Image (cartoon, rainbow, N blue to C red; front, top):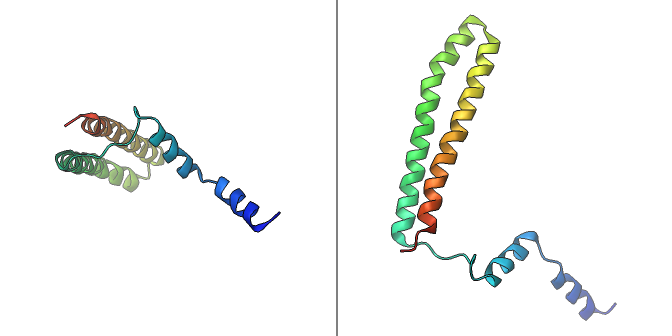
Length: 107
């Protein structure tokens, strides 16, 4: 192989990221569009609200978890931690849906 051929092979090896970007750019329906400043601000506010809701859920269950720890009730601790994880997941899904609506809105 010559040096020119090696360069060509190296150019052909693209990361998954590069391939995905090329695919997005090639398809006008899914081409990434820029968000307006208003959308960026709204998304930022929605993320802040989501984090606040998650913090509320954590605070609400922390006292129950502390009580279970003091009693040594390990099954209750695990149940409460699972409930907290599910609540975080639910909140995240709900707010990510709201964020996606803002992203998809055409201003």
